[in-house]
Amino acid sequence: MNLQNIDWSLYAIIDQEWLGGRDIQWVTKQIIQGGAGIIQYRNKVSEDKKCYQESKKIRVITQKYHIPFIINDRIDIALAVDTDGIHLGKDDLPLSVARKILGNNKIIGFSVRSYSDYQHAKYADYLGIGAIYPTKTKKNYPLTELKLIHEIRKKSSIPIVGIGGITMENLAPVIQSGVNGIAMISALLSSEDIKNTTLQFIKAINKAKKAESSN
Image (cartoon, rainbow, N blue to C red):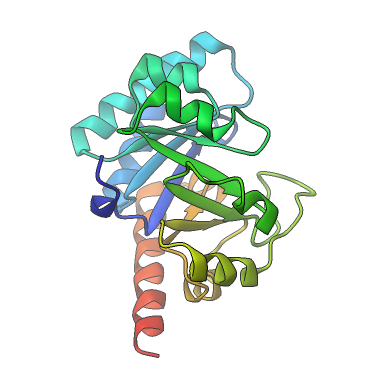
């Protein structure tokens, strides 16, 4: 998949723990119809079978709308469902090994919290940097200063998404730091009107990008 064709502005993460019993295909449709350009599925709680089944359901929707679909951590599920890629952290399978398994046509994302993490991102196609702000998804998670994004952006041209506690009120500084977009979980999935919330975030992101480009 051509990374240049992906709209990174809003990277939506569907976390099993935030679904609240709602149908995963319905949630996926709402997010995509709201304007998200890429979808990730994150499941830290379910058995393998459910993770596989839910991933297949998301895959049907993302293929219908031609939206890239990424799996968090689970390279076995990524292969089984034939997702567009995988997202890994420093404690997961090494990126070099993941690249050998997946080949060059799949997307590999990598979580970065420090410059040291970035130095291990050789085989990554994009970076998720954060947590930028305190987040309900990962309590007591160390925060990452925006200056790290500035520093990495000077050295790398690959897509970067900021993540962690980002809201419509605090997203502007993140956009201004040099990211291509923002990733979010709770800000979308905690909403009763997911589609409209996604639309509002897209508007806020575009406004912040426009303001940044005019400076």
